Image (cartoon, rainbow, N blue to C red; front, top):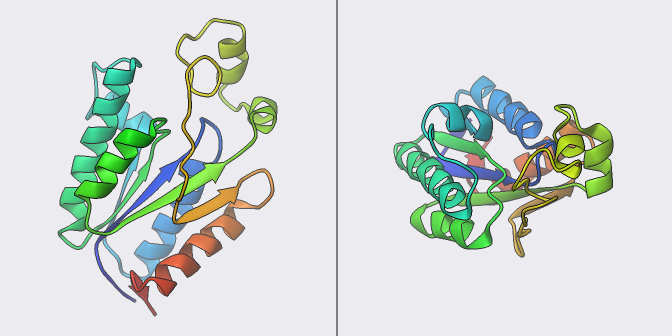
Length: 177
């Protein structure tokens, strides 16, 4: 498999399945011989963005940092996969403009399904007022208007979603068999 460097940017609410699908795609790319780096939002916050809070300014700075690293990687032939909530459209668009090959993947999932899943118990705490500035509950999430790929994780499996992304990457020439 030949490939170009590109950024695959997963956005969506907490628990929607961003990391799960990002990891499936990452593994499939690696098996095909691609150089891949995945920047997971939770991991980035404990390393690259340590010390940033959850104000709009800090969230934007976190996304800017992830975007910068993705851009460095992708322009050097690496597939950079970002899986971060990235709730604000303006900063996602800023990152998009700075990147050469940017693919936005919107992992949609209704709030009631996320609350039912809630693997980390975060929605329960946010709804009880124990977590301030929680995206989708007490802080806004601006859904992408025109993502390159969109799927609803409450209606399809992670494997089906990964297949949809894979087909898009092939169609756009970012991957070749």
